[in-house]
Length: 212
Image 1 (cartoon, rainbow, N blue to C red):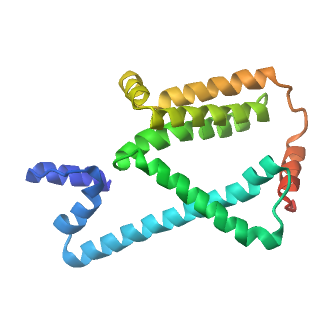
Image 2: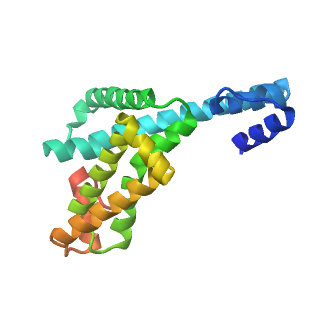
Image 3: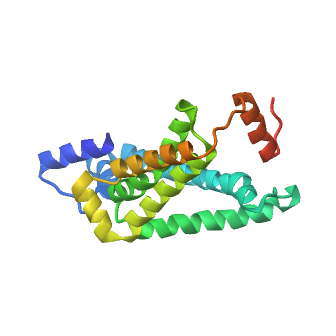
């Protein structure tokens, strides 16, 4: 809404922005009054920092409770959580920093990073919920396929340009490839015949939690 409002007002006034990243500050400094503009900027900065903090917490939680036990086969001792949390936070921030190197503005981030990486995760969740034949091997194949496609988009500019010219962005081909990987690998691997309750209990047992 802010971006569309800024575009409409700038078009009416004959102004242009050097980057779409400045739409928020343009509305605060050129459209709203000083008091409201200041409150507008404070709210925007607070929302940005809050989102960044919650994303960092989510990344650390996933690394410690899902990735680390899956790779090592053991859980982190409670007394070591603080140390491993700091390490995981540094890893998550380093990955985020590396990703931002390949983008120039918010729109490029949405097109390259979000559009390339998230379809694999989205397909995994949808197929796991809606298709009873889906297997955990298929879910891993989906995530790996989506991640590999996203890395190719970020690291290989000619490939990214071809995808953009052919499909308008990476979201459609990433979704199709992830879906195909899920279906093929799931059909080639044994079906899980356990009940949904047993699967939930297995997840909680793996994470060391208690099922209420």
